Amino acid sequence: MKLCFNEQDLIDSVCVFTAWRYEKRPEQVQAELFYEEGKGFSATASVDNGLYKYPISEQDLIDGVAIYLRDYHNFDPQRLLIELFFEEGKGFSAEIEVR
Image 1 (spheres, one colour):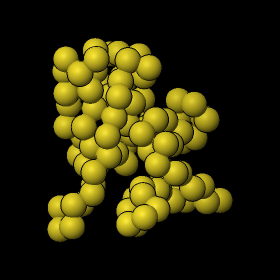
Image 2 (image 1 turned 90 degrees about the horizontal axis):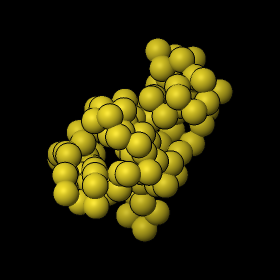
Image 3 (image 1 turned 180 degrees about the horizontal axis):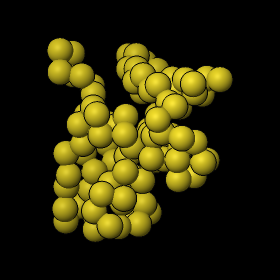
Image 4 (image 1 turned 30 degrees about the horizontal axis):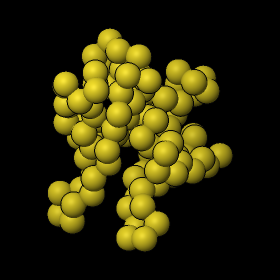
């Protein structure tokens, strides 16, 4: 089975991941996604109205998708193959293969 995440799904995943890591609620987190040629994917998560900012690596983004799917949809993270994409004009997305 394959799942597709759009940009909002990825932002939600960053919020869930940041909340999990820093013991906050997902609704307390704002996230911004980045892609840089040669460096890959990253994000910045802001908590408490921007008082705290946390860098999110590409691996953290992937882990965030897995945690989101585990916590909200009962998927086994060990069975997920997650690939991130960025396309100019279309934005961010991810394909998740469930093995």
